[in-house]
Image 1 (spheres, rainbow over the protein chains, first blue to last red):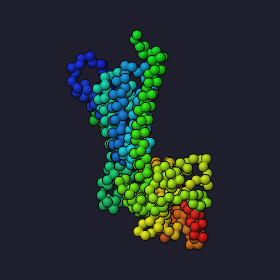
Image 2 (cartoon, chains in turn blue, yellow):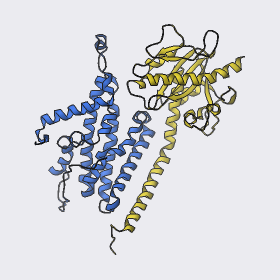
Image 3 (cartoon, rainbow over the protein chains, first blue to last red):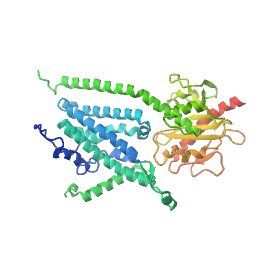
Image 4 (cartoon, each protein chain N blue to C red):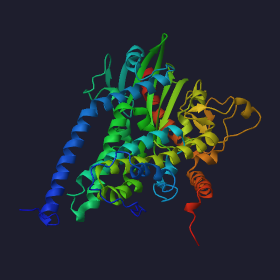
Length: 227
Length: 248
């Protein structure tokens, strides 16, 4: 697990008059979607991007769970930031993620048992999602609650859209479905079209993520390293 | 006196309070949601049993349909002797009730030998036909696989089957939970012409046409398919003994 991030250092504001959605706060949400995307730019959270992107439905539920864990976690850490003893701060962060994940997992089992069964161990694995610990350490520990919640939301969304995009590609070409519905007409299959079983296996998720990074860098020249 | 946030006392105090608070919150949540989760698990089991006898059930009508079709819940031992038999509504506290036997826990507990396990089955009545639904558990490629096979009252002909899995590969081994895999089991036989026990094999490369003891395997899911074969072979044998005893 890595906690290295290129976090935007937001200094704590003393002025109380800052509008709720100031330019700076908006940036907290929009940056992780593209310029500072946790998966494609920071290359964090790759493990779950490979594991649960076989079907769109799983990716969506996983994303929603991560949005919840990340916003709540950032809020809690930010509220406690001035009292957390620095020597055990990583442990405290871990306890916060772990508890929130257990809350999500138990709730899913009680109210959405079929989805919970399909996600099986992956909800538990949110704990090991490096993005979450990374944001706690890099942002929530040093910022006020509201910007922290926005930062959590932005990063979770940045994670979510990549996850869903990969899942769309994999489900469409791997099983000919989207969100569980058949979308490729039977006539195609009659003409000899076949689902690509390779898309279902984890390596193709990595390739798909790679292609997304490629497209992103071709479009957004800011991301290209100078050599 | 100002608190020194880097002192050992503060650090220990913080950790202590954190553990107590988190522990209290999580355990009360778990306790609160437990009844719902148990109900979900029981409903899933009912749906699986009903699927094996070709009754379409969902979470809302599972309990009602289960009570309608399942007339008797029986537990037998390895040698085929009846241990317990229940009718009527399931009492969640009666651990001798076939419905409450956790064959998965018994299968995974290495200290319980196959001879010591409980073998539950469900006697169903569907359109005047008596069917026996046999639960089974085995190993796939990544984790547990399980299923329910419904036999007709000659204890030979398969009426239907449902299988499911914990973590098989989606699109490959995971296909055992689809009708495409399960439907061919209908009409297969577990006994040969002489009435000897033969079981059913999930055949790699496709079943021989007309062979009543084979079904098509899953391409790319060989280990899961073999797991199903092993599970059928091992489990149905016990029930075959029971049937022989009661019809000899």
